[in-house]
Every structure is written in structure tokens, then in C-alpha cells.
Image (cartoon, rainbow, N blue to C red; front, top):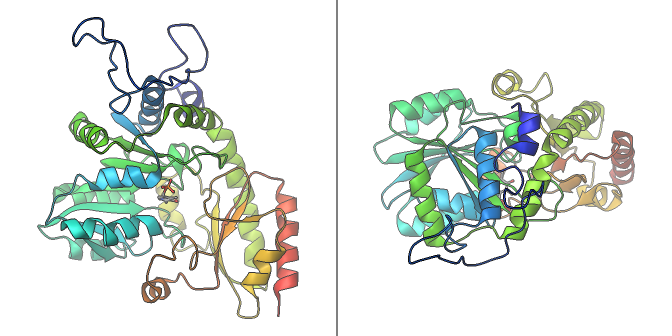
Length: 381
Ligand SMILES: *Cc1c(COP(=O)(O)O)cnc(C)c1O
């Protein structure tokens, strides 16, 4: 099946027991054993639950991986993956990435002897220079949050394979509808399914997909041991969200390219970061590894624009954390999503106070444009 059909029929399609076209919410913690140790495949819902299993099978199939795992949040999923590392190991991370991923490495994993190396992963030479015997994984986001930098996944995979290093890709911004890192050779894909996969800003969830059974065994052991699993109701909601991923992403893509072009022409805007723009530094690299540019645009306002007034004036677009929902959301990375990154690092990589991140929703694009024009008009000092 092709991706648009897989989104609806992939994984476990419906309920074999009753013929229900949707997988039921198996709201149960435990399962009857016919005799000692004789089960129907499930024994306790931390270890496995049929609704969660349907979701895990679905995401594995969508990403072209071997096994999928569902967690209570994107951070729980990332934490589980990072738990593959041991004391003394090092991991390479990009110089701008999701703030929470940096925080868990800096404030939690560092305490257990796992260290990180910050590298500009858009430059393969810099990654190469950072690799030593202790480096056991490279973690990339492409596009990065919030500066929309692009890392060449094939280059990273090639370097990692030659050095026996794991390639981990946070595919939250693209989703498997637009980008499939495992098909490009990555070992592990992680998602904040809170964003596009869920798509309706009504749940918090994380997913992991691994490329082979060996990693699958390890990840399942970690998932079962640490226990940050997704509950059956949220698993059901996420399956429901994924069914419309294709139509939503098409609209996100269309709206975003229109708004990126529009923002580029506004005199209140200093710069626009969107890989779909022809003048984006990594437009061609992105095109070589993804089927679309996604719905996230970042831009910097000029000196004379008061961003606080801009945020306050917006009516259709909501000021809030998160992204990837049907509704447009705008955020101020320096104080919100990336507030946990020290200011000197933020400034150095370009997450300055005038940077705005816009998650373009699926509303009528003319209403979004009008809202932005209003915001600019009110905010010019
Ligand atoms: C939101 C986000 C996360 C964290 O996911 P949660 O579901 O909020 O725990 C990780 N990576 C990226 C790219 C994100 O946008």
C-alpha cells in the first residue's frame, strides 16, 4: 500500500474479535491466563496493551522500521532511546535542537556519565572532527527547531556506519508522510507525536521506531523496565489523528509556502527561515531527502517591531507552546520552548529575542495573512 492508504489501514486494521473498523480502547491493566503462563500475547499493560500495540505496529510500518514503541510523551520516548547509552559514552547533538532534548542530556544524563558534544551538524566535516572512540550516537533533527537548519541524513548515516555509531533522527517536524530517515539508513526515529501525528493539540505522546529486531529487543526492555508507556485512550486518539495526517500535511505545506513568500516580502521582517524558499541555504539538501517542506516557519522581526505587541494583537493565530496542530500557533523560542538553553548559547546559534516561530495551521490562509498584517501594523514602533 502507498502512504495515504497505510495511514488508514496500516498496522492492525480494525478489531479481529468483533469486526469493529476501529481498534477498541482496551482499558485494562491485566489479562486472564488460561493456565499458568498461557496468554493470548498480553500479560500486563506496561509490557503490552492491544490498543498501544496497534499504534506501535502502525508507526513502525509508516516509518519503514521493524518495531515501534509508544510513550507518554516525546521526552519519555527520547529518554528511553538515550537510555541505550552507558556511562562514559558520548553523543553528538546539533547546535540548535529541541530545548527539552538538550535539557535532559545536560541536566539528567550528564549525572550518569553520558556526555554530549554540540556540533553544527549541517557541516559533515565538523561531525567527522567530533567523532572519537567514546561517541556512540549522533542525534539529529532536520529541520532543526527553531532555525530550520537541514542536516544531510545520508551523509550522517554514512559516517556513523563507518564508525559503528547509532544514527537517531527526531522526525517530529516532517513525519513519515514527508521524510523517512530509516529508509535513508538511520537506526532509530523518534517523534513527539504530540505535534503533527496527533495533529489536534489534544494529547501528549511520543513514538520510537527502530530499524531492526536487535534494537527492538533493547528498546522493549527499556520501555518495560522504565515504564513511561502511553495509555490506551491516548493510543486510540493518536491512531485517529494519524488517519488524517496526509490531508493535513498537504494543507500545512500549501499554507506555509504561501506565508513564507508573504513574510519574505514584508518590510517588518528581517529574515525568514523556511526550507521551501528557493534562497534557503539548504533548500536542495532538504529536497533530496524529503517530500515536502512542512508547516513550520521561523522569522526574525526588525528592530522597530515590538514582538510583545505583535503577539498580543494576533487573533486567529494563538500564542502558545507546541506546534503541528490544525490551528496556527506562534511562539517566542528564546523565552518559551528554548528558555532552558543558556542565553549565550542561544545568541550564538541565532535564537535571538526577535525570533518568532510560526506553526502554520490548516485554516484559510487569507485569514492567517490578515492576522499577520494586523499584528505588524500594530507592532511597528
Ligand atoms: C515537542 C518536541 C519534543 C518533545 O515532545 P513532548 O511530546 O513535548 O514531550 C521533542 N522534539 C521535538 C522536535 C519537539 O518539537
